[in-house]
Image 1 (cartoon, rainbow, N blue to C red):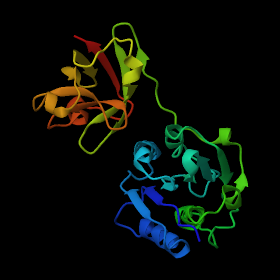
Image 2 (image 1 turned 90 degrees about the vertical axis):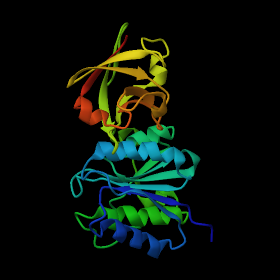
Image 3 (image 1 turned 135 degrees about the vertical axis):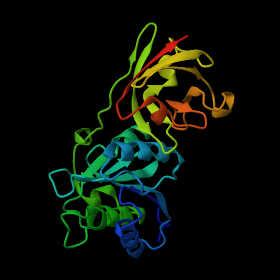
Length: 270
């Protein structure tokens, strides 16, 4: 028998209940030798966007294999359960609600996709509220053991998969108007902006800049890392995912500037 592929697992199940552990138990019974890597079960409950961003940020560091993700506020509804093939022999398994879309973009797009409601790998009876246990975990386990994608479900058009809608930054001659996409546990705020979008300006690394946020005007600098500024200073930096983010050295940009999801931020060189 071939060596099982690694399985990564991300969810909003939390650590107080048994849900994540039950999914792991199902996987271990079907594919007992599969390496199982917990990326996080601390995604905010039903927060598909946070789950999608975390999954996309994590995937480049994950070994090729099966990537199980469950943040599923529409469980039991008409939303589809899917397994998707991507480059490097990777499979993503989860609800078709946009959760997988950024990760698939990071991997170069979709190669093929199937719908899982009638999967021969499902557990019976299928609960209307726990597809993580009854659909996603067993499918992930069988794919880890070498099952082909077409064996897992019914083929669907990859272009029909749900995507995650995010605001688009506006790059103008003298300013950039971006949006807060996600705040991590340190209060660093990821923007919908990559450094390569600013190759032609109007901002440059190393320059001082003005930040206009919901709580007013702030001075900052586009810096490489936190040690390049003094404690309490505001910096714009390229985070580990390749996106530009706002931070406060030894503080919280989200708290200082009152930045919440989709908050508008205007950046201008000083």
